[in-house]
Every structure is written in structure tokens, then in C-alpha cells.
Length: 259
Ligand code: ADP
Ligand code: MG
Image (cartoon, rainbow, N blue to C red; front, side, top):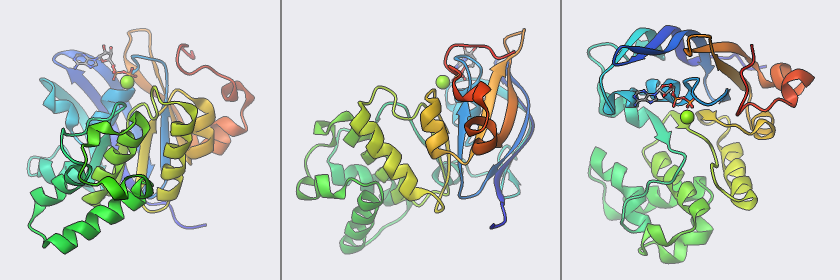
């Protein structure tokens, strides 16, 4: 078995919105080029935790953290961190597609252009490769200059993934994977993630335990304590935690407190 290297090392991490503590003392290591799922009841801090991994949480309001999040050894909460670079390396895909009102091509090229100038032929190649990696090339190659907003929701979500892949991230964070998508669109996204396995570190939140057991290598189970503060309950290989554990295999992770 290949050696497991942590891409992200979270150490005694607590998180506050204003003065309100919402996550307490989470420590875990997110392995490089593996798929990690986060499950837990609503309000236990899953989204907040995910947003903390690339400091997107700070865009909303005053936040405070304790502890550390290390990305290949560098504390992302350190003072000298370049946030634009961090968010390119660790990028977020939201539950609902958030494309720009531009063409399919321009959506994918957007982030690439921000980083630096490329000749048109090179940009074309980057866009094509990203669309292929996101498993949507065949569906859009004949209409690259049409509005991205004309695509179906599932296609838009895959285009968001293409846009993210175009800037060559190392980590993809996905909140509420496939929320509101029909089963066929969901399978397409799952296949796409399957195809990215071993090239990228992926962390996703899902309420669908079958999906978690199909896709993820590791699972983190969050819950909230009696003070309504989110905590990590367990972190282990998915096989061990869910597939071989009847207690979890049939649990409704969306609505229950576990302890
Ligand atoms: P989950 O994704 O597990 O449902 P969240 O991370 O969204 O949980 O929320 C965790 C807690 O933080 C909840 O009590 C929620 O009300 C609170 N919270 C979430 N976002 C904000 C915010 N922007 N400002 C203040 N409190 C928030
Ligand atoms: Mg959430």
C-alpha cells in the first residue's frame, strides 16, 4: 500500500463566528489524493469546517479561530499566507452552481486569465482539458461560446468543477455534493469524482450515506454537543467506519444526534 501523506493537518481547531463558538477542538489529517467525506446532522459545523480549510469563512464576517490548519506543513492561518493563492490551491465547489453570466469557455478561462497571460491556443487547450477532466467536453464542445447559464443544473455543476480544475488546484472542497440533482446527474458527478481520485485531494460533505460509502476513502463524522458546538466524533477509513459497521450503515445522518 502506498504511504498516506496528509495534505491538510488540522490541530486542535476551534472556530467562532463573532463570539459564538461553533466548532470545538477538531484534530484530524486529510490524506493527500484521497477522498474524505464529512457527515453529520444539520448545524454541527460541517460547512463552517470546510470553509475554514481555505479561509473562505472570513469572507462572510468577523471570525476567530484557535489551533492550526496546516497545508503541506504551512499554517494557513499564518500572517504571511497569500489568500488568493491559497484559494486557488484549495478550491471550493458550492452546493448550487455559481457560474458567471458568460460563455462556457469564458467561465473556464476566467481564473486562468487572472493568474497570467496565455496565448489563445494554449488557453484553448487548458479549457478543453479542464472540460474533459470534468466529464462535460462531449456535451459542450460544439457550443463553447454559448451562455453557461443555458446548461442544465447537473451540467452547470460539472462546469463549475471544470472551472476549478482549470487552475490546477490540489484540493477540492465540495459542500453538499449533488444537492437537488436528479439521480442521473448525480451519477455523472460521482463518476467524475471517481475519475479524479488519486490525482486530487477531495473533501465533500454529503447526507447520503450510500454515496459516502461508494465514493470516500475516509469519513469524518461530526456531531454537536449539549452546548450545540460542533465536534469531530470519529475519523477513520470509510470501510471500517461505515461499510463494516451496521450501526452507521443504516443511520440517517441528516437528522439525528448520535450521542
Ligand atoms: P452544517 O453545515 O453542519 O449544517 P454550519 O457550518 O452551516 O453547519 O453551521 C454551524 C453553526 O454555525 C450553526 O449553528 C449556524 O447557525 C452557525 N452559522 C453558520 N454560518 C454562520 C454565519 N455566517 N454567521 C453566524 N453563524 C453562522
Ligand atoms: Mg452545511
